Image 1 (cartoon, helix red, strand yellow):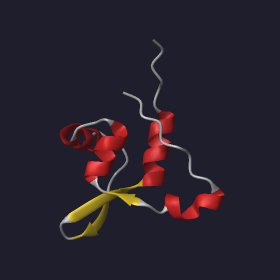
Image 2: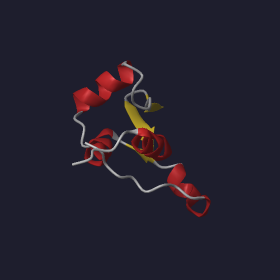
Image 3: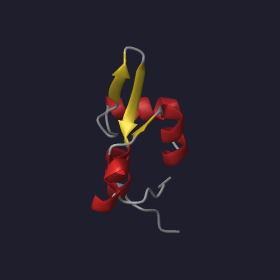
Length: 75
């Protein structure tokens, strides 16, 4: 499933610094938690950043680049 994430622009610099937690990432990508972690392990999905000793998140800009690089489905 290909989910469109709008590109980040220079005028929207704060958006490029946005960190998304796992529930938001699953909603945006349509992928479940286990698939996200499997793809991270296979180096096929952006790596999370450590926010604290027990919390991680993903840079929105990394997710946008990953989404843009995915092939689109033609139906």
